[in-house]
Image (cartoon, rainbow, N blue to C red; front, side, top):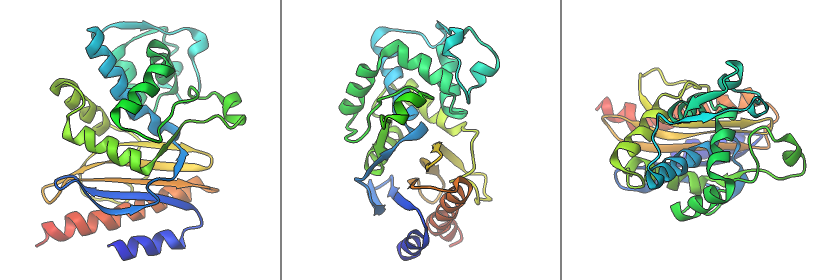
Length: 260
């Protein structure tokens, strides 16, 4: 598997960062460019999810609490904006932020707890390269080179903690996995998998990056996988590559073992 994966990476015109981790043994099966920092795109929404739930626990804030949404909060790529919502429950915003990568929901949640709190929480969680420096769709800051970033190493650590359910209360830990498992964007890791698998994951993409990272639950093995592609010139091509890499890993770790 490892040789085939590296051959596919070498044949790619893009920069590929990748990890595969056995979650039962907590061992990396494959790690490629783990420590290189890159634009996180919407992957940043996963640690935001954990940070916000942590803040709710600390401040005894209920999931059904309602938050106000001003019309000037509405941004593109948002079902909240499409509905012209002026208020929403915290639960709905958290779900939309992950399953449709809603940018308005994300920005409203960022405003509630603040960037400083979020970055401090990321650090306490053990994330070394993950930094929130701009809100979603802030093209002015992005044009100045101010972007949100992470690394394959950080995403591997984050999803290990999510799998172990040792960060939040049992109820909120299960909620995180439930929300990630309801993801509606399936153009990458799940793209070429015919089995009806449980995949708790999050995608992220901009014009020059495409990412997908998550946890595959199966009877053979539970494993985490993250594929992060930078210097992209064709997003569809990049998502196809993620799908092919995912299929190779799934075939080796799940299909081959289940067929024994």
